[in-house]
Image (tube, rainbow, N blue to C red; front, top):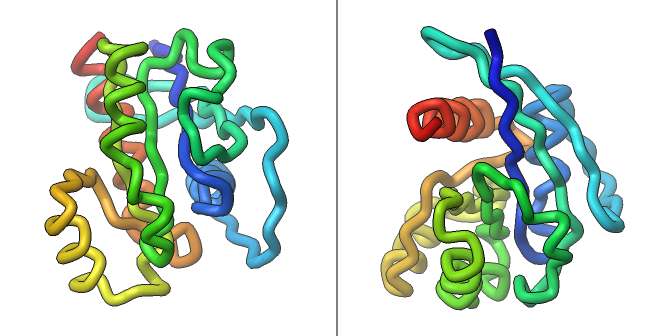
Length: 164
Protein backbone atom coordinates (compact mmCIF):
# COMPACT_ATOMS: atom_id res chain seq x y z
CA UNK A 1 0.00 0.00 0.00
CA UNK A 2 1.23 3.49 -0.87
CA UNK A 3 0.26 6.82 0.64
CA UNK A 4 0.34 10.02 -1.37
CA UNK A 5 1.86 13.26 -0.01
CA UNK A 6 2.12 16.75 -1.49
CA UNK A 7 5.60 18.28 -1.39
CA UNK A 8 6.19 21.86 -2.55
CA UNK A 9 9.52 23.16 -3.85
CA UNK A 10 10.02 26.83 -2.93
CA UNK A 11 12.79 29.35 -3.53
CA UNK A 12 14.06 32.27 -5.55
CA UNK A 13 14.18 32.33 -9.34
CA UNK A 14 16.94 30.20 -10.85
CA UNK A 15 17.99 28.23 -7.76
CA UNK A 16 17.44 24.88 -9.48
CA UNK A 17 14.06 23.72 -8.17
CA UNK A 18 13.03 22.31 -11.56
CA UNK A 19 16.45 20.76 -12.05
CA UNK A 20 16.25 19.00 -8.67
CA UNK A 21 12.80 17.71 -9.57
CA UNK A 22 13.91 16.41 -12.99
CA UNK A 23 17.01 14.81 -11.46
CA UNK A 24 14.89 13.02 -8.88
CA UNK A 25 11.96 11.94 -11.08
CA UNK A 26 13.66 11.40 -14.45
CA UNK A 27 17.35 11.19 -13.48
CA UNK A 28 18.15 13.86 -16.07
CA UNK A 29 19.83 17.26 -16.08
CA UNK A 30 19.85 20.03 -18.66
CA UNK A 31 22.11 23.08 -18.77
CA UNK A 32 19.36 25.13 -20.43
CA UNK A 33 17.28 27.31 -18.13
CA UNK A 34 13.51 27.27 -18.46
CA UNK A 35 11.44 29.55 -16.26
CA UNK A 36 8.59 27.85 -14.41
CA UNK A 37 5.41 29.84 -14.80
CA UNK A 38 2.81 28.97 -12.21
CA UNK A 39 3.40 25.44 -11.07
CA UNK A 40 4.70 22.20 -12.60
CA UNK A 41 3.66 18.96 -10.92
CA UNK A 42 5.42 15.60 -11.11
CA UNK A 43 5.18 12.51 -8.97
CA UNK A 44 7.35 9.58 -8.02
CA UNK A 45 6.88 6.63 -5.75
CA UNK A 46 9.54 6.26 -3.09
CA UNK A 47 10.01 2.76 -1.72
CA UNK A 48 10.98 2.65 1.90
CA UNK A 49 11.66 -0.31 4.17
CA UNK A 50 8.06 -1.02 5.23
CA UNK A 51 5.94 1.13 2.95
CA UNK A 52 5.93 3.26 -0.17
CA UNK A 53 5.14 6.94 -0.45
CA UNK A 54 4.04 8.64 -3.63
CA UNK A 55 5.47 12.14 -3.58
CA UNK A 56 3.35 14.57 -5.58
CA UNK A 57 5.89 17.33 -6.02
CA UNK A 58 4.78 20.85 -6.87
CA UNK A 59 7.55 22.89 -8.51
CA UNK A 60 6.33 26.44 -7.86
CA UNK A 61 7.59 29.47 -9.77
CA UNK A 62 10.40 31.30 -8.02
CA UNK A 63 9.87 34.44 -6.00
CA UNK A 64 11.95 36.70 -3.79
CA UNK A 65 9.01 37.24 -1.44
CA UNK A 66 7.35 34.13 -0.02
CA UNK A 67 4.32 36.14 1.03
CA UNK A 68 3.51 36.43 -2.69
CA UNK A 69 2.98 32.70 -3.29
CA UNK A 70 -0.56 31.81 -4.23
CA UNK A 71 -2.16 30.14 -1.21
CA UNK A 72 -3.61 27.44 -3.48
CA UNK A 73 -0.06 26.30 -4.34
CA UNK A 74 0.81 25.82 -0.69
CA UNK A 75 -2.45 24.52 0.77
CA UNK A 76 -2.50 20.81 1.53
CA UNK A 77 1.29 20.51 1.53
CA UNK A 78 2.77 17.86 3.78
CA UNK A 79 6.29 19.19 3.35
CA UNK A 80 8.12 22.19 1.91
CA UNK A 81 11.57 22.01 0.36
CA UNK A 82 13.17 25.46 0.47
CA UNK A 83 15.87 25.55 -2.23
CA UNK A 84 18.64 28.12 -2.38
CA UNK A 85 21.55 28.50 -4.79
CA UNK A 86 24.79 27.88 -2.91
CA UNK A 87 26.64 30.05 -5.45
CA UNK A 88 24.33 33.08 -4.98
CA UNK A 89 24.15 34.35 -1.37
CA UNK A 90 21.24 36.64 -2.26
CA UNK A 91 19.08 33.50 -2.54
CA UNK A 92 19.63 32.59 1.10
CA UNK A 93 20.00 36.02 2.68
CA UNK A 94 16.28 36.10 3.57
CA UNK A 95 15.82 32.49 4.65
CA UNK A 96 14.95 33.35 8.24
CA UNK A 97 12.23 35.79 7.19
CA UNK A 98 10.76 33.29 4.71
CA UNK A 99 10.86 30.45 7.22
CA UNK A 100 9.06 32.58 9.80
CA UNK A 101 6.34 33.28 7.24
CA UNK A 102 5.97 29.58 6.39
CA UNK A 103 5.88 28.51 10.04
CA UNK A 104 3.31 31.17 10.85
CA UNK A 105 1.00 30.22 7.97
CA UNK A 106 1.71 26.46 7.95
CA UNK A 107 2.84 25.48 11.47
CA UNK A 108 2.39 21.73 10.98
CA UNK A 109 4.26 21.45 7.66
CA UNK A 110 7.90 20.35 7.80
CA UNK A 111 10.50 22.43 5.97
CA UNK A 112 13.73 21.08 4.51
CA UNK A 113 16.37 23.65 3.52
CA UNK A 114 18.48 22.63 0.55
CA UNK A 115 21.54 24.37 -0.84
CA UNK A 116 21.70 23.44 -4.53
CA UNK A 117 24.53 23.91 -7.05
CA UNK A 118 27.30 22.91 -4.64
CA UNK A 119 29.26 21.75 -7.68
CA UNK A 120 29.87 25.47 -8.36
CA UNK A 121 31.32 26.42 -4.96
CA UNK A 122 33.79 25.32 -2.34
CA UNK A 123 31.70 23.39 0.19
CA UNK A 124 33.80 24.70 3.10
CA UNK A 125 33.09 28.30 2.10
CA UNK A 126 29.33 27.78 1.85
CA UNK A 127 29.22 25.84 5.12
CA UNK A 128 31.10 28.64 6.89
CA UNK A 129 28.81 31.25 5.35
CA UNK A 130 25.68 29.37 6.46
CA UNK A 131 27.11 28.87 9.94
CA UNK A 132 27.97 32.59 10.23
CA UNK A 133 24.37 33.45 9.36
CA UNK A 134 23.03 30.76 11.72
CA UNK A 135 21.21 29.01 8.86
CA UNK A 136 20.36 25.39 9.62
CA UNK A 137 20.29 23.55 6.30
CA UNK A 138 19.19 19.99 5.68
CA UNK A 139 21.40 19.21 2.68
CA UNK A 140 23.83 20.59 0.18
CA UNK A 141 23.07 19.14 -3.21
CA UNK A 142 23.74 19.34 -6.92
CA UNK A 143 21.06 18.61 -9.47
CA UNK A 144 23.83 18.53 -12.08
CA UNK A 145 25.85 15.75 -10.44
CA UNK A 146 22.98 14.20 -8.51
CA UNK A 147 24.76 14.70 -5.19
CA UNK A 148 22.32 14.19 -2.28
CA UNK A 149 19.21 14.52 -4.48
CA UNK A 150 17.94 10.97 -3.98
CA UNK A 151 18.88 11.11 -0.30
CA UNK A 152 16.91 14.33 0.13
CA UNK A 153 13.68 12.93 -1.29
CA UNK A 154 14.12 9.57 0.45
CA UNK A 155 14.44 11.36 3.79
CA UNK A 156 11.50 13.65 3.06
CA UNK A 157 9.38 10.57 2.27
CA UNK A 158 10.55 8.78 5.43
CA UNK A 159 9.75 11.79 7.60
CA UNK A 160 6.30 12.10 6.03
CA UNK A 161 5.56 8.44 6.84
CA UNK A 162 6.88 8.90 10.36
CA UNK A 163 4.60 11.89 10.92
CA UNK A 164 1.54 10.31 9.29
